Image (tube, rainbow over all chains, first blue to last red; front, side, top):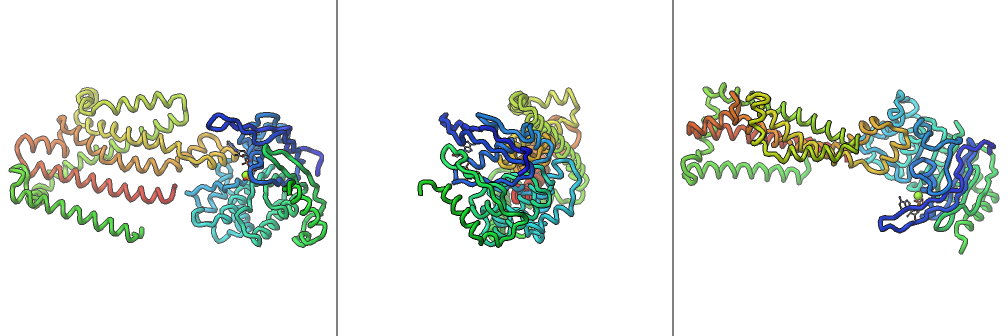
Length: 256
Length: 252
Ligand SMILES: Nc1ncnc2c1ncn2[C@@H]1O[C@H](COP(=O)(O)OP(=O)(O)OP(=O)(O)O)[C@@H](O)[C@H]1O
Ligand SMILES: [Mg+2]
């Protein structure tokens, strides 16, 4: 981990006011510092506030307490400069654009010339080269998620936020995508926050894993992942990996 | 476009309906069930397609259709423009809404004399068509521009989209199904407006033909003019329905 902090989630709390007027504390006192070029995975049970943290970092929500900064600035500055890549939990592809045009959208929005080679490469990388001309409605859920990852990466962002990008994939495709993601990531070592439910995925990809628990959610545990990069899928069969996986699983279900 | 079974069924039922309607028209005329002012369908067709009247109807259609088309395009542009303006400048929305509804609440008949004075007799039809179309498009586009989904709005925010980029690449495409539905319902509105306007002393057009036929008791002429206007309006409506189906399939 480099000493320079890229993303600073500084003692952040988030309170939502529901339609009936009651207040819901989604997360409480979350303190996360992510170094430049670091890959951090966020694990936690459903509803503990992982997406909320991600949305705060993406400047889609305003923190009720504390403050989020990226390189010392408001996160909105980053998105305004087109330097933020996000793959949402629900893919958010535009139904009227083809797969290829969806991936090229960030160029258009940034007012840049579309790098068709880059678009093509990324589609190949996520295994959808043949579907460049298809529409999102013609793809499966897992394929749509992969398109949205390609879209998040296309501009080589400074910060990458991934919200359960492989949630809809089968185990085999998922492992394959993890290897590909690691390779793409290694190209620029972009600062990454990955939300996932999979302990193995977190261990394989991240430099550091954070476990969130509870309602309101808060960070309960932190684990540095020592494996050298590039990581071969075979590390997932080492005793060391299994020991860490057990520890994280235990942290996820403290009552069990 | 390939048609599915239910679509073919719809089409067949539609054709059957039209045939029954025309047959009824013919029979009522034949047995004089509705008196002398109800001619047989075949009489009207004979009158309408008589080569000696080709020029008469041709000129009237040319005049009316150009007024309808002109009013339609103008009304469309103003309606869409006003909707985009009120969407972009939210504080102005209630004001523009009220203005649009006020204009719509005034019967065009009441406005016609004003247009005749302000503009000219010739374009009064177009002006009324414009107003009719404007309102339908404004309402459709205003509601359509609110239809983009939250996750797509989040995406555009994260991508750092400017207001105009978001309008062009998200809000307008998301509004397109509503806008096209509006365009469909604006078609008959344009026909009504233009022909009504021609009643007020235009020197050419189907509306003029109707008025003069009425005054001179030229029953087949009256029915021919009405037939042309109705058929054209129905055809335009049908074509817009096809466009609507395509757009709804792709953009929503
Ligand atoms: N816009 C909102 N308004 C009200 N409550 C919200 C809103 N967004 C999230 N919440 C609440 O905040 C809590 C955390 O939600 P969040 O989506 O962050 O969970 P998550 O950890 O991402 O869950 P999952 O793993 O199922 O995606 C939930 O209780 C949810 O109901
Ligand atoms: Mg979530």
